[in-house]
Length: 301
Image (spheres, one colour):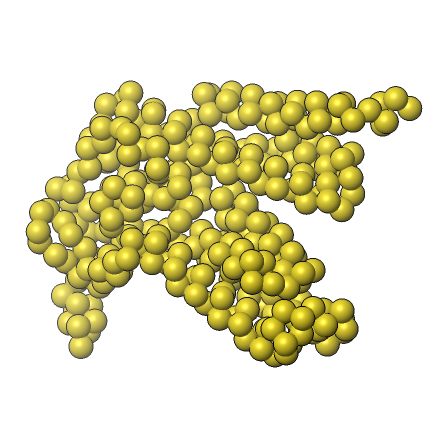
């Protein structure tokens, strides 16, 4: 059939699916109401990129929220550090106060639109990566099928059009797996650095990316013991398979350290203390336990 022999039609379909996805997201972003946890993620990311403060939502790695908040740097946003919710760590309340009480409706709407579009762009990158990966293994029509399934998946559409921190980690986790797959197929310094950097990006976006550690170790162990070709490639790279594995581990550790410093901007102070109301510094432990003297006394001892 001409449909399957044509080289132009599958590329047209890929672009059509991508355009359909963007159109659905545009309508979703324009009409969807604000969701509860969006406030905290938007404000958390904004505090990190604007004020270098990492104490809000400190239980999650910061990169995903920071990426969503990058466009907010171009908005004139007032941050109500004087509000009581900031002093006693009521993060959801502080997010509501910053978005709904401290800034005009026009700025509030722009905050949601910009943060949501950043999430859409990350999802679009995920779709392109999956389509390319499938193209390498199944050809162009397999890529078209993968793109179509992602573009019209209701879960993908709903999660991408909100300012949550779910699609970014998925994108970076798939990217990390793709680069690790390339490292396993052809061990080398370039592949090791790419795998290490993407692994670090995934780890800095969401805590459940920790699952990559046993997954990587398991795949490497199976390949090392079962694949003579894999061991031969390690020997060709470093002269010894054990030396190659040790060097790869060192590259992973170095990559994670470099990206950790970049994300926290070469400053570990935000992990331990907090600047509020000008030069006054309040320890993070005090902010987390609030105004409870008995807990403060126990914590400081």
